[in-house]
Length: 175
Image 1 (cartoon, rainbow, N blue to C red):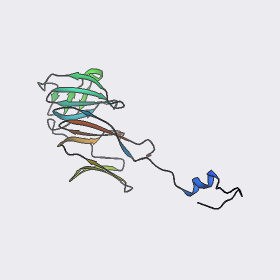
Image 2 (spheres, one colour; image 1 turned 45 degrees about the vertical axis):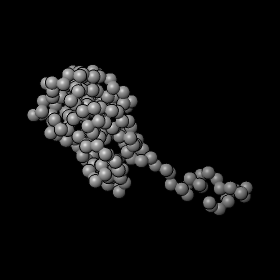
Image 3 (cartoon, rainbow, N blue to C red; image 1 turned 90 degrees about the vertical axis):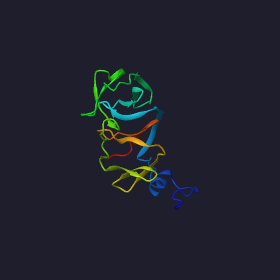
Image 4 (cartoon, rainbow, N blue to C red; image 1 turned 135 degrees about the vertical axis):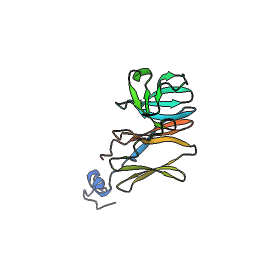
């Protein structure tokens, strides 16, 4: 491992640390996945504490940190969605807010680039690539309805017809 600088048969911890680089967490990690049937569009609340899921069975609001559903409206008449602007009325804790959504019904897309990260579709799903050459493959067998970064770049959402998955950027990544 290194030269014995103590005369006791081992290398001091500080010397070992200098020799081996620190292990870094992956820049993006799956934070949570929830089942949401008939999902068509998604969007983040302005403060990015919540993600709004819109679908054929109404709307649901999920806490970005816990993945817990904190709001639900089963109204399926689509009056809460303005397809021309891609804006949807919130429900539950974001009831008084209007959220920009992306997906099939709105015809809009979430940002696919943020601070050196790019999201691209591949034959097996999605790939998140960094300017430094790092990447994360997101295998997705279902039809992706919407995907992209939150405005701050803290979150990456992937919505299929049946699931909503939120990925979080590692705090150690200082981009």
